[in-house]
Image 1 (cartoon, rainbow, N blue to C red):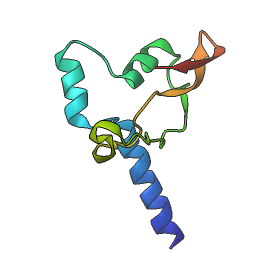
Image 2: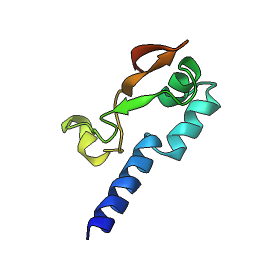
Image 3: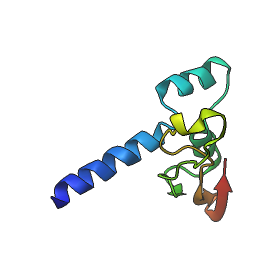
Image 4: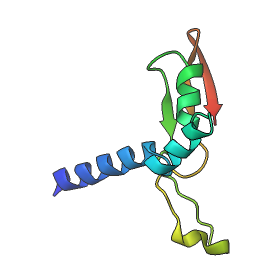
Length: 91
């Protein structure tokens, strides 16, 4: 049972890293833009980013938003290093 819980958590984390999904990522790239996580990867020292609340989702019920709740939806926040100095970031 514990293994299935860990597997489900891992699946949720992987899904959250896709933000709104591959289609939204492709849409960003087609407009010449990077995703929030891609921008942070470029800004921070390699491998130093630690994300907070990656599984958060919005709770909006206006405008039909309850029908669209992508995992990891919202602001990407965390900390990492810039030239070896710890910084806190959001994107």
